[in-house]
Length: 64
Image (cartoon, rainbow, N blue to C red; front, side, top):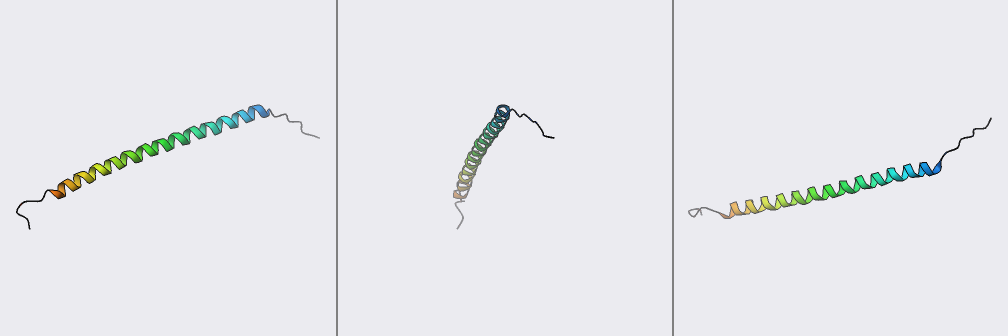
């Protein structure tokens, strides 16, 4: 008894291609979002550093 299974390879290749394409787009968007988040956090850290140094630089005149 032989199994006679016909698989449409073009549809299978198309489905696999679409899945890989979708994964590629999602990973690219994720990397762009992480890069944006990192640049925003770096900007916040730089602003905090400027505020911190400006607060430290203002010492009272009567201090030793």
